[in-house]
Image 1 (spheres, helix red, strand yellow):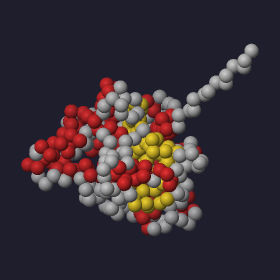
Image 2 (cartoon, rainbow, N blue to C red; image 1 turned 30 degrees about the vertical axis):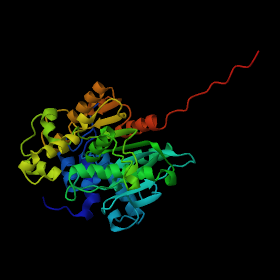
Image 3 (spheres, one colour; image 1 turned 180 degrees about the horizontal axis):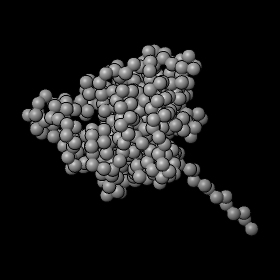
Image 4 (cartoon, rainbow, N blue to C red; image 1 turned 60 degrees about the horizontal axis):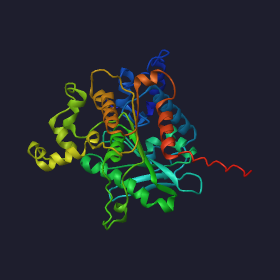
Length: 381
């Protein structure tokens, strides 16, 4: 595809907004899965997928254009990667803090106001484990809403598939959670109330953290690894049910032509060849990456959201983010008696709060429980 000049991004966004008609009352809003113009925009400008879920909406285009205009108007429009300050939303209390040895093992942290230890929500960005950045969450409704509710917030980067296999990438994110717990005293975090969420790759990773056994090692020489990796709750926005790719056809049906090939599957786990992928060790690794099969009684509550049409998958984007992923996780949670809230595209079309408001309410419900009301003793007669 021919590169699109970045300087024309404001004009392109304006034209796209003009061309994308609002959805009729009661109908689902257009997305990159249903509108060819939004799909092309996502391919050319992946940075405007503000929540990193791999599905671009007209509302995100509107927000991206507004943010771009605000940043240019403030004469601070440089990309965060350029080393200039990112002016979207509240400034982090601590920025680009190293939590591991790799250059991408960094996180941002926003401290909640108040003297008491606060619950924490951790954002894990999307991007197919090949792209994306923690800065996507800057200025988002979930971040500002958490801080307004007295919930601390963190956003993490992690290694990409060029650096590490999927089984190590998710453990980067587990280490980030452990690192934040190790900072609990210094940063005013309640280590018993830690949640995670993200879109697409970040969504699946959040589910893996929620359902996987605790990775804490009490005997580890590294004090970070002695901390728990478990979550109090998790949010999954357009995520996947399993990273054991052998299970996908049973969950979704056959992939559309050209969506998957053997080399990509092998590369996902960094297997050298098909023979290695058939060893007992490879089988153990892949089974350990199946979020849906890790679900068991006692796991934390999860929030599932999918904005993609519930039709037979037509392309890679729909296959990777299909609602059958969410439905499969929901059904397995219900079977295991794990609390689950599932919101699909058709649910949003019925009206009510949008996905970000519902996710925020979910976090407040599970991380900020109302104090038990103690009734005053009746006066003695």
